[in-house]
Length: 251
Image (cartoon, rainbow, N blue to C red; front, side, top):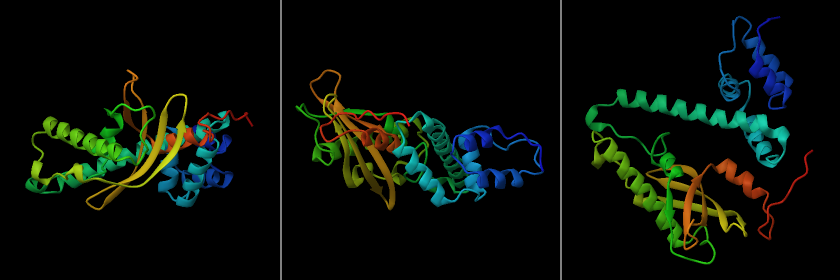
């Protein structure tokens, strides 16, 4: 039996993120290691998935539990681990994209859509104002969809300005982005904020796209803000039919 110290694995086990069988299998895999080959809860989870100790189905179940129990303090470790796990995925995408670019002739280089660091990621930090209204437009309102496309297109233009070596003729046209399966996650009546989730599609690439339509700071219009799909789903899962946030007692 190895005497290796495994604080990250131990924390995941203690807080119910992984099972004892996962923990035992991981320690057996690390029998000859001198230290854990990761430096965070999320990177530990990423390693477990990469080693097939935690299956894809178990990762999906973990995600569902994190959404269902979002209001519980006991869920904090799971949420943190999943957030850090997503960061590891983005880092992996960045590395793979860098390797792809290095292996591609210069005149053919361009970044495919949905790569970490690309326009879809940049758009999450953008804010766009819509026409004045008493309540936020519906998630699938034509003005909302048009504004989303404009936001992506403008972000792409800024990317090209910041990277003049990128070939403009090899870049996708973000004004052609399609937003499919648009759904409302919930509506916070007092704050006048509508949570939305859609699937963004362009050039054969598809990705979940979450956003909120909320009242502008001036009170005279509304704006769209990109967001994390999992976090927005958890937030609006607690909103009742009257647009009020439900208070869930601690377990």
